[in-house]
Length: 234
Image (tube, rainbow, N blue to C red; front, side, top):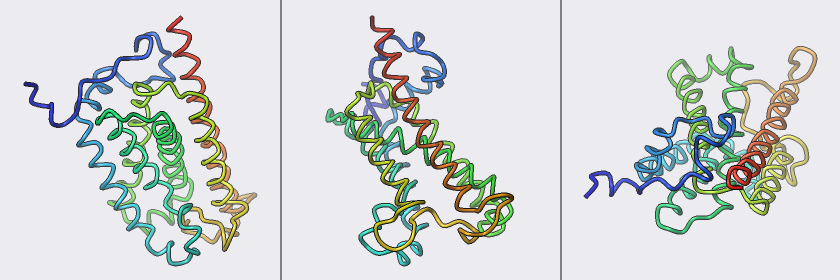
């Protein structure tokens, strides 16, 4: 018996052949993708621990937001919870394209947005968090991006799932930066007031610009992966 059997499953088949997909939609080495699935349960646990840490990190922001808006507050822990659920569902034979696609969107978007604001607003973030937490936030969020790129092995990103993910992350974007239903906007707390000047714009606008772009990026990548998967199968 394989010693890793209790830790995961044999990797799923590659859609159309891993080497036939363009590197820009499937950038990880095949061996790394395989390891992710052979050790899927430890990865699920790591993501659940990250989710728990994320909810703890947002604990003060929850206190400042009406309860009916809490769903829109924990963006990064929400993304890690989604990928934990998507991988766990696959591991127990209950795969969900919707979960996998939501996880892909969230881990790409939040995995890149957090390093973006950490760099753009470096002085205050670094001073508030300290070097250890700053480095942890930066590296762990980039890790979210890496793990998102194994998901094409368990989904072709069908259009219905992409539509659901697009709708959710568009609504989340609106609540975070533009038109909250109740109270103020729900974006992750930044180390400056939203209205503070930042060169020729404001802090809120800089953060929102990154979030808008990084909502479009996973949409494009998911649709491109879907198209390329169909192409290599034909």
